[in-house]
Image (cartoon, rainbow, N blue to C red):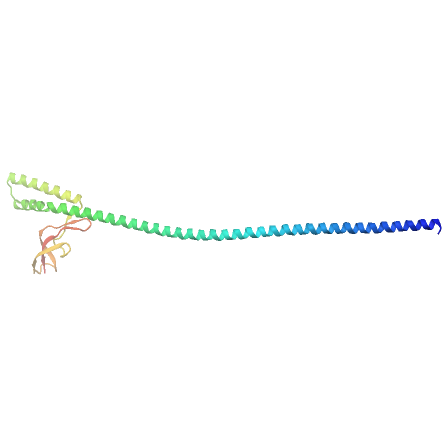
Length: 221
């Protein structure tokens, strides 16, 4: 075989071997890259799954916490309503208590005034009788005494008026069993039906309508 052809053949074999080696090396490199890519993808997928699981766990925990908070809020709302209802009831009871107390105080005061005034009404009656017994007398001493008695009577009436006690206007009025006490009855066409024609004892009434003393009267028809 000529020397030149042998050389060419060797060269071709070397190139062929080099090409095969290059292909093998490239295949190996590609395989390694694919393996690394798969490893990276697997690692990425694993990380993603872990993060997803953690996120799901967090959401689940938050959901449980939200449910617990809602239940707590509902309980607190119920308690708040109960407290409000109790406070409203207590406030209403306190207002009622104040009104009752005020009425009781007023009633007690009225009763006390009526009792005190009733105690000295007989004295006032005696003063009026004394004045009537000497009415018309022209004796200087009698007139002077009458003026003194009249002044005392006036002072008593003013004191009673300041306490809210006034004389009933009974004469000529229709008989009222809530204010008058009839001790005599007369038939007389000159008067109206159930008309008070005479007052034997004056009656007195407190400003709120409470009778301190009934008027003793004579009623016609």
